[in-house]
Length: 241
Image (cartoon, rainbow, N blue to C red; front, top):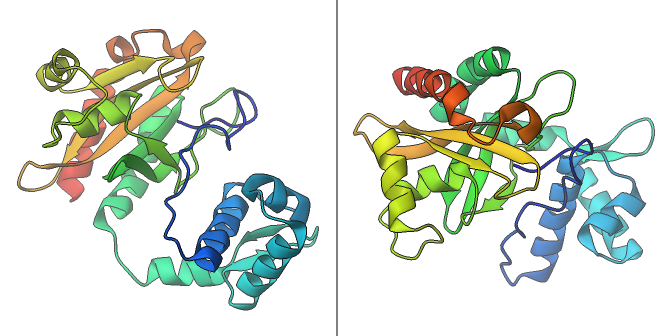
């Protein structure tokens, strides 16, 4: 689950955002994502998006005008108030429930925790809670990761009607039998994780809740340590839904 600077560059792991074919829209979204990952100078925006300096500046200023970006006292761009207003205009019961459950799981484990939904060939982090300090595995909300590696991807694949998968039938069968998945160094060297399914009222898997952190702390079989607490957190999410 993408790293902060203590493990790796957070811009290295996430899969590329989808391309709509509408050039100015795709570039604007790239600028938004770059500023959302971490407050960004103009040079940062150019480096993270690959856009020319003039183009990145023109788009950032336009997004700022509409309130989608804002600049702080140091001149760094960050998400603007309009984004929060748009997000607040819709109610997401899963994310609301996660705000109540994820912090407690973080306190229990002392590790980073995330909630993922599947969107096509990717999984998207829709909620996260990070420990206040120490070596951690940071995944910003909105991060898109491929469905080819990691415990979260295994969980979201195991109960899906998908024939095209990077995981073997045995791997997915084992996940369904245990009720959770684990990984060590699959998506990122040095990172381990364990994930469990979150179900809706009909019993359909709608998300994966995960705990992730350095292998040195989590071990290569993190499920042995954290699966029980993770399953309890998944049940708490389901009750709140």
